[in-house]
Length: 241
Ligand SMILES: C[S@@+](CC[C@H](N)C(=O)[O-])C[C@H]1O[C@@H](n2cnc3c(N)ncnc32)[C@H](O)[C@@H]1O
Image 1 (cartoon, rainbow, N blue to C red):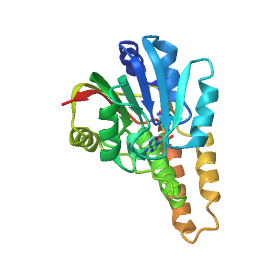
Image 2 (image 1 turned 180 degrees about the horizontal axis):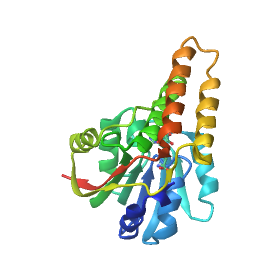
Image 3 (image 1 turned 90 degrees about the vertical axis):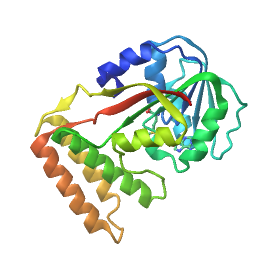
């Protein structure tokens, strides 16, 4: 999916990665995207709280020499002043303890290192982007029903406030637009409808199912009318203030 954000590629290629940490690596999609087009890394570390995600990332990244760590608790089991570059890609809205995480990331970052954050946001979206936003909101709600911390997509203002609250200064930023839009009533929107259905029907035994089902119907109607597109992201290069 990251290949659909053309401006992101230019940003990634221009980075001097050095000793590099991807925090919240998930299944490794973003990290593979970075390593495929930038070989300026000296070492690569990938951390996630979820052992299943790390297992999947090991497969995605088998062609690279990545040091993986499952870190379920803070403080991180990593020495101070280790990394030149840390990335967090669509991970902010998954972090339960943002102050704790940022305190740790600043500790393990070298003095002149940078933290790169890219995060989709919820304001100024086109109707097609709102289809994805609504789908993501439902997915986050269902994750929360399963006890997984997953907040709604933030506004770009909230994201910048979080960065500032973390004691980071933004040296450069850009709004990244996704180039791929599925038109209404085409195959991609039909696939998406099926995904919404599968996600909702899996919750059919829950007491609150009717409300979920109604939300799913509203999302599908919006999808059929406007199509779907992954939302714009706010990309930021930050340093410790
Ligand atoms: C949406 S995924 C992003 C995956 C990856 N960065 C990408 O864009 O391809 C967010 C990830 O953050 C992880 N996460 C949440 N809280 C975390 C924490 N405290 N420490 C490390 N990872 C965390 C989740 O387990 C999840 O895999």
